[in-house]
Length: 126
Image (tube, rainbow, N blue to C red):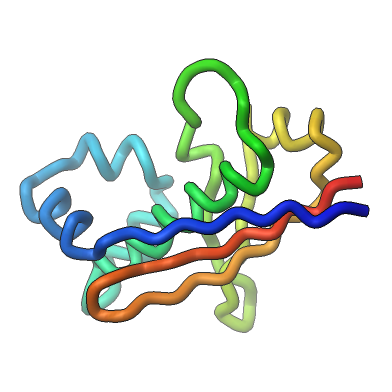
């Protein structure tokens, strides 16, 4: 068994500007309906979107995404378990890629301050 790490950090203000600028295309490209409903329902949506954006980037790094073309970001979905802990669900091309890499589990951790959101992903291979 091998552990494959990935991490990312995002400026919350950058995400806030995209949301406030009416960038529906940005939200639709990056986030599933469930993610959008969750983040939009929070007092500070940009912080929650930024944390999920960081998680998606961290997961792509952890699974060693190498297909040609852009990552299909909606194939990496950040949800929560019954206790509220973040979890990741891979679908579509990302799930297929992870399977070819013998990735069996991906765990994530999210955090944010007033200025930045960060995420760590650990993929288990083998």
